[in-house]
Length: 426
Image (cartoon, rainbow, N blue to C red; front, side, top):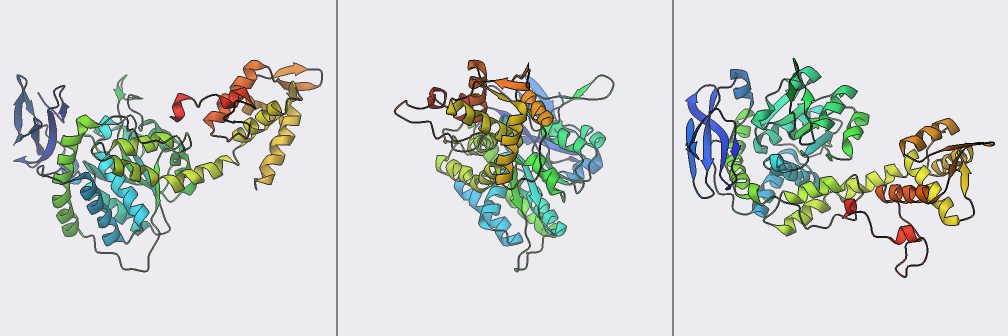
């Protein structure tokens, strides 16, 4: 039976490693929770598994570990990878730590509900490419590509559990949609002749288009690879191979020992915005043997989460919900005209530095998207502030993490605001 990797119910695993079976054929490593067996074929549970032959160019371009080797502790491994990015690229502590988080997460990505995504920005493309080169030394089954197209993406053999390291200077909307879809487990995409393809997997994307990066940013780790006055260390092929030969076996052992332990982390992420919480949970889950390291990894996302909060303050949907909840709390109106609501929303956005102005018709479309019903009256379209609308507005306010001055412990104020947060935020 040809195999690119297996996970068995009793904790045993089969993984691909670089092999001596032929120029285009990896070996298989069978792990039974205590011992590794390596060969072009391995036997387990009455079945014989054989490694596949790969296209020569693909096998040469993809890096596989040569063996598995003890890694010491999760903290020690994390610190060593962190030091790699600081030493070779002179990156700041936070950026190096986030790159270490991403690198380790790729080894457990097939156990996580969402695939880790990393976006890289910066004025110097060469430095960004060096980040990708160094990531190729420490990520699982890394494949560096440039300017991938939708057709090329769909043709990739993602059954090899590839980590895609992409220099994608022009990130068009169709690729943005594919990248987002491929971050969710179980979302298959149409293939050729009625087939479907599973493109789920981690990816790091170097893109010169900041607007495109923003479309991926809420659910992705974002780092800025800014140039430094210090001289970066040379990352020629010899240096890369040395780093990979040192770290790939340790990271494979980290995968083998921790894959079965991955579960929802007890680390509290409730203070993050709903956009950042899934990413925070994903990072925390990657360190099941070290709860303190899991908490530290989550805290690295704080600055990114603050940026999300700042962006949301100028989001028209958030402004609509904020205005409607304020009118509900005021208690003096049973309805609000859509044109009146548009004036309030535009005034709030202008006070926060937003120059766009929304018409009553555009606000009506936004209300439809938010599932807030509008009704016709003699004076025009309006929103009736009945019980159902009040509940919807408060649910949206919680989803957008909008603070409420009427939430008080004594139970006074708005009853809806005093209810416990929805399960999503816990």
